[in-house]
Every structure is written in structure tokens, then in C-alpha cells.
Length: 198
Image (cartoon, rainbow, N blue to C red; front, side, top):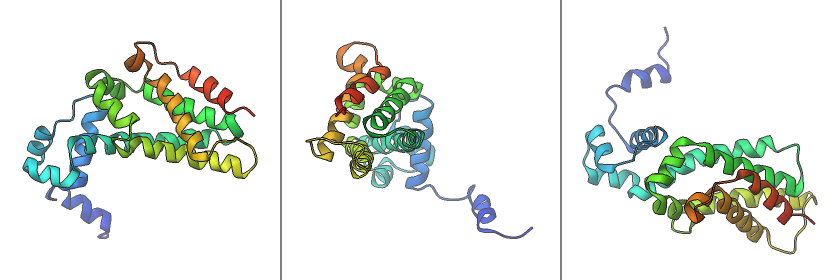
């Protein structure tokens, strides 16, 4: 057997010291298991102080944002790839619906919304964290592609369109928390598609 970087890393993993990435992975695993992400417990499991943990990952909110984004980013990428056969507003609407549906259907995410509704909304739907900006940026890049290819026209700026698409998406995906109604991903597609019609 040859000595490869992988074999060395695997043999060192048992003795490797915890770091920010180790903390993130542990917290993400807990989140995906629908468990509450508690800094005190993560620090204890890693054998480090809470001060060290906070230095590595920032606040609990910072950590939760990165966990949510680590789930959202590939979801958005997959939804975008799946909508490649569509154009214009239909493409954007398909991506928005798929993203909303993933949020609605994910038991770990629904548990986060149920357990900590104010925090979940603040971190995912406001400027209080970079999460919403990242989602808007993703939609802006897709909208820009459609505009550049002349498959979508609007009197609004691309950034404004992306913001409005994300706000429509959020209003239906988080309807249970915002208005006490059932989340409806189908309405996301219809609303966004209607909004982006020429």
C-alpha cells in the first residue's frame, strides 16, 4: 500500500485536534438531526472552551447562518441546474418553487422554524445576516443570465427583481410562521411566474 495524503489524513483523524471546521461539521450534523445547536454542548464534545469555539465560528447566530447556507447553496445550485430547460420567468419561478419546497419539506428546517421562529426568520429573511443576501445574489445571477440572453425584460433593475422574487418565495415558504397559514410552494411558482411575465 502506498502512503497517500488521504491515508495520512484518515490515520490522523483520530488524533487530529478539533478546529473551526470540526465544530461546523458537528453543529451541522446536529442541525440535520433536528437537534438544537447549543454552543456549550458543542464545545464540551470537542473538548474546548466556549471562548475557543466562539473565536472559531463566531456567535451561535453566525454558526446557524453558515449551517443554513451550507444546505441552501447546493439546493439552489441543484434547482438551477434542474431548470436549465426553461427560460425567462418560468426558469426563475421553477428555481424559486424548488427552493421553497426544499425548505418546506426538510424536517430539520421545519423543526428549527418551530423551535426558534423569530431567530430562524431573522437569520434567513432579513439583513441581520448574510443568508438572505446570498440567496438574492444567486437569483440575481440567474436573472442576469436571462436578461443577457433577452429571455426576460423588466423596467426594474436585476437586483430589485431578485429581491422581490426572494420576498415572494419567503412569504409562501414561511407562511405558517408569518401568517399562521400553510406553506404553499406551488404558489411560489405561480406568483413568481406571473410577476415576471412581460
